[in-house]
Image 1: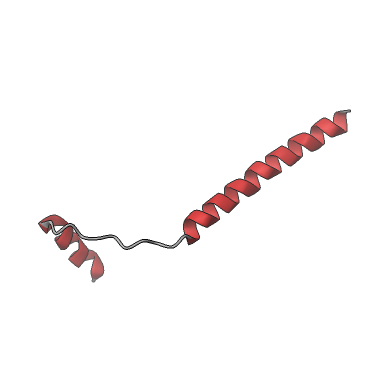
Image 2: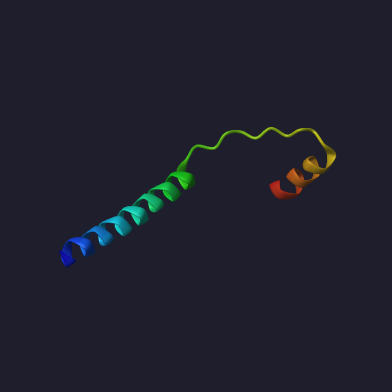
Length: 52
């Protein structure tokens, strides 16, 4: 009885950790969509600063 509870706890924690790792891996590797510049003066200046 004790071992089945321990096995359920270990399985549950492992499932949570593996699903969290898969979620973060998906976030890191998902395709990025192009972001459009709105044409405001500040965003153009920032994009020129960061592109150098």
